[in-house]
Length: 132
Image (cartoon, rainbow, N blue to C red; front, side, top):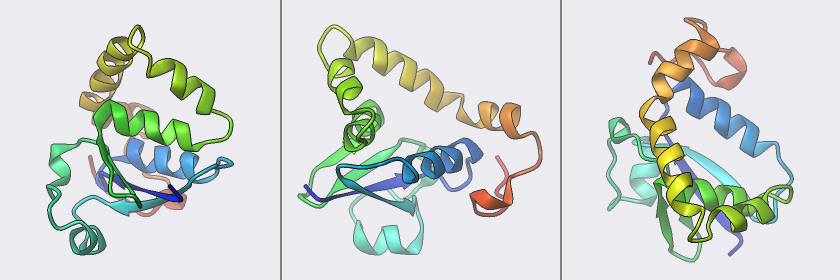
C-alpha cells in the first residue's frame, strides 16, 4: 500500500481541520484528500455514496480496500509515523468498541464542534468558507 485517499465532508470545518493536520504529519503511507461528493471523488470512486451529508469518513487504499467510520480513522492514524503504534493498540478487540463509540459520537457532533471551535469564521487556510 502506497497511498490512501481520504474522502471528507467539505461542508464541515472540523473535517477540513483534520485533513489539514493529517496532511502535515510525517507519513509512512501517502495521504491524499478528496472532497466527498466532489467531481474527482465521483469520477474515481463512482460506486461510493456521493452524499457528503452521510458524513461517514471514508478512506480508499490504492490496493482497493475501503475503510469507513472508525476503521477509516484508524487507518489514517496507521499511515502516520508518530501514530502507527497507537492505531495498532486502538484496533485491538479490547479497545476497538470504545474507539468506535468515541468516533461515532465525534462524527455525529462534528458540525457542532466546528461551530464551537471556529465560530462563524471559517479559516481561509482551510479552503474557503463552507457553512455547517
